[in-house]
Each structure stands twice: as structure tokens, then as C-alpha cells.
Image (cartoon, rainbow, N blue to C red; front, side, top):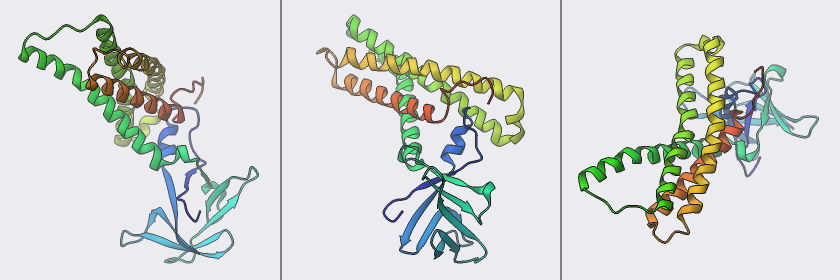
Length: 251
């Protein structure tokens, strides 16, 4: 823990539905300030700064502001690190792998969705530009196919995240929404759309394969196809980690 910032997530979480994603991203980042002193990003004092924790014995860290509050860092039977609050078994948090670290997943997710969204928005903007600028040189059949592939890939990749964002907004507005049958149905739709997005990722990769070797393709088109394909791949990876692609009959 000395030269890294490990993350811990709660063991009381969903594992087999898209609802697992918020629990995956709701992590505590632990940072060693100096030997014998650490801070946890989610535990802050009245001044808004992270509270310091001092090691009082191996694996036991005491809150500098409140000696009654402690954090315990122990290895479980599998040899993985766990953090608990005052030894409470209901508050055990497990260390996540580097690729599940929220400082990795959040930027990847935001950048991927932003790239796909910009790609989708370029579609109507390009149409408006062609209408205003007059007749354009006709694209070759191969480049026309690649352009249509990128449009389809962008739409398919964006749909599950748009619906999922709506579900989260409904949950934030009413926490009981998660218990309604409507929520379960919408989550199933998210999973179906996520699998379609996997197909969209394949289509985006094919667009790259069609565009890059083609000498008629501009540099902008090549970079666009590659950026979109990478964004689709990253979004699919986050969807996999968030259980969008895991189908169980019961959550």
C-alpha cells in the first residue's frame, strides 16, 4: 500500500445485474501519506479534508480525530486484502484489481461515452454541412459502407448507456424505483441493448478494417473510425465489468 492507491468496495452488493456497476464504482481509495499514516478519500473531517488514520498495531488503523473509529486491514482465506470498519463483519470491503479501480474505470467510461456521443452527433451535423455547402464528391462503395458501419456502431453503443442513465436518474429521484417491476424490465432491456452494442463494436472494427487500407479515405476518416472502435471496445469492457452482459434469470 506504500506506493499505490488501492481501492476497496463493499461486499454487500449486486453481482449479477447492471445494478452492480454503481457498487463497483462506489469505492474507497486508500492512500499512504507517510509510514504509519494513511487517508481514505471518502472519510473527511468537518474542514472537508481527508481524515488521517494512524497505525496503532499491525493491520489496525485509528482515526486521528476520533480514537473510537478504527479500520482493520486483513487478508482473507484466499489471500486477498479486506478492509473492515471497527471489526464489523457487515462492513467488510474487498480490494479491487487495478482494472476495476474507479480511477481507471470512470475516465475510461466517460471518455468512451463522450467519443461515441460526438460520433453520433457528427452524423446530422455532416448532413447539414453537405446541404449548405452544395454537392459533394461521391464516396466509393467501400467508404460508404464504412461510414454506415460507424453510424450503426455509434447508435448501438450509445443506447444501453442512455437507458441506464435514465434508470439511475429515476432511482435518484425515488429510491423505491429499484423495487418496481418496471425497473427489472428496463434492466433486462439494458442487457439486451448491451449485447447489441457488442455487435456494434464488431461493426466498428470492420469499419476500421475497411477504412485504413483504403487510399481514398482521408486522415480524418481513418482517425475517426479508429477512435470510435476503441471507444466501443472500452465501453464494452466496462459493460462486462458492470454485469451488463451477464444474463441470469434471477438478480
